[in-house]
View 1 (tube, one colour):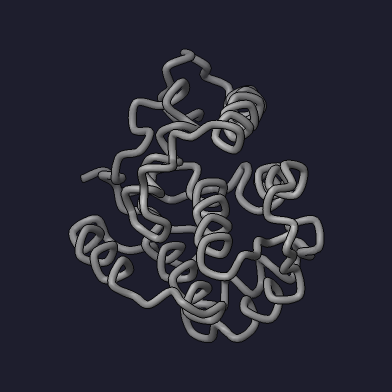
View 2 (cartoon, rainbow, N blue to C red; view 1 turned 60 degrees about the vertical axis):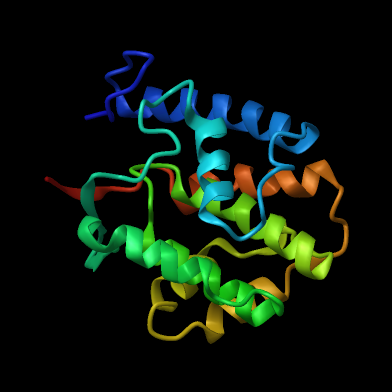
Length: 201
């Protein structure tokens, strides 16, 4: 079953195709526009603004904290009742080095604040932090899909692998739109058609 959406699409595969098309177009607009200029990199406000911009034409919940508990495989993301406090803790984390920034990224993935679209939003969020703090971004075309997935699965326990995977893909081409868009292009390798188990509250 497809998630409830503004487009009244009931087929999940069709929704995924339309969602990808719209979110990519909106991601380009984000890159070329100035709507994120008033947000501080590394804050949830910025992440929420990114998510809202990417998905507001598709979902009513765009930019809003999820109100269901979700799990993927055997991993349960942060319970709804602790979600706000988890995000507050993440925002207090230091972000002056590569290791610190990736630790924030890992924690935000564990929080998984939105019902859908976390991966695409947090990859843009991550690149904006790296750009501001280190004048670097990730070239996602250099990130092996399987290595990334395995490293992210293990990251709540041991984050050395994801740090290694992403460090190898750092680039100083921070204003290259093609490199920026690769984080969105990879979304269906990393999260598309993901099966989330949900618990309605």
